[in-house]
Length: 291
Image (cartoon, rainbow, N blue to C red; front, top):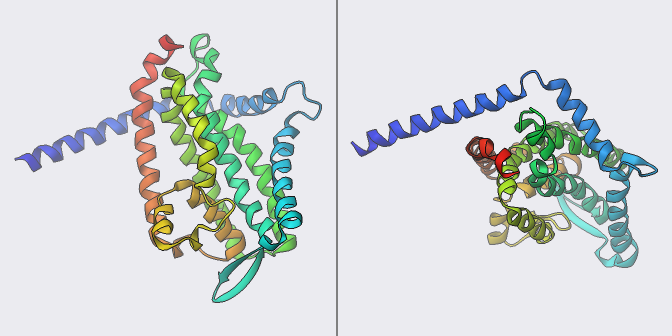
């Protein structure tokens, strides 16, 4: 009897999630052009008044990358290489190149988490003064950040092609990029509405991100960690994308070669999606009153 009731409850919950998802899709329907226009406007507005405008979106991460290049290629030379196993061959990989490929997804990840949590509060005029679907705010904001990521990825790929080479494995980037976009868009469906209610949560997210950086394998190879730590790192979705970019561009490994890591990510992807749909629909009607 209890098992039967559990199954009925699960089916009801599943139907509710589908209805909620239909609401989000309905909010996006007919707003495609406006979303793309606002994504471009968002990028321009962020750097309004600056001499090079949106170019600062490239200059700022480029300076960060330069600092790490100087530190590891000039200052700390004994840490200048990383050993990687590529199809049974132990190869030395330049540490700057190793970190460069890790930093590019990290910039998007960091911005998507920190700024994604602020999306609704930062665009409250669309909620309180304009009849505009709230869920599309997170969409055009994420697209705006993705434009920058595309530009940085293009520059990174040129560098990798010159100093490391190209291969068919590089095509996997076409899997990792959309997956990363969707994952952090779904995450913002949860964090942005909750931060609209609680500025403390927004401040907490901003505060912990500097620590999260060191818990993600941007400057080190998480596959080289001792077994317990390496297994724990498999549950870090940010690490999945950073490793994914390196697998595609440096290690010549297919994403399905690490089955455990991939399955864990799929579970987390679905969980973040369902949680995002639930939290957004639970809070969206109350957001205008709070703002």
